[in-house]
Image 1 (tube, rainbow, N blue to C red):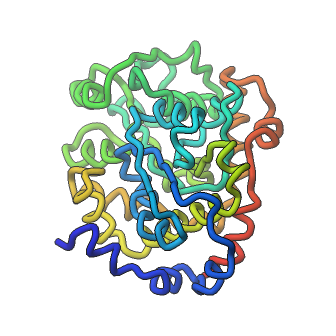
Image 2: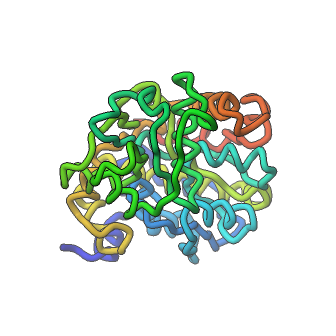
Length: 333
């Protein structure tokens, strides 16, 4: 096993640029970042591997101080971005929309990856509609699974406020209850679905990486603190470029990425990490329009009664695609 530093040291700017289709002269022709410090929220989530893989790429972009700020789940990510304790971070699309309507000073910059969440159920659950009148577990302190599940149930005509019996349990407890048949379904994020499949627990009802319409939209978005983006446009573009190039690395070298994040303590099980990374189409950031994702989930959340704003208002309030538009042209291939 190679060390994290050994692996990243081998990723020279020229070599990585070649992989991503970007000549080093493009980055070199830009002005340096307005700040050399960049803070990224650290949540031990396998699907967000591009952020962990980006450290040396960020240094090559001119950030001499790259700090991964520990946060307590996705709630912590939201708080860190809103307060300015984090400058940029990946975050789940549906809860981001909830925070936009709540007035958090955040800016959505790009899509990070498609997929990652899976709805797992007992043999009684064959489709999302089968959740009507059933018991579904969500983590007590994390709005992400609930926001996604509410979106999914609203899409098939269920009322998440009336048709589902929601119970709150930590992830480990929810997995045990599903195995015992004491709950009917659970929405898991890596490595939970991989662990459940390995143990033969439950059945996959929806895999958002492959099942439509969920596979047509981003799961995680790249989000910035509004003041940071306003004051540091060059730094924002350079940070975004490094993370998107790291997404290309995840697509091209999943085995090395899996070893890397296990060594870093982001994931514990190499096999689960590799399965998750291989299953996520990281390269779709070039193909998909992140505005479609905001429109889709904003409409679902409005149908579920979780927001009042129209999709267009959410997009107008929160989206800034200028950096992504430039990078799509630069990072061809």
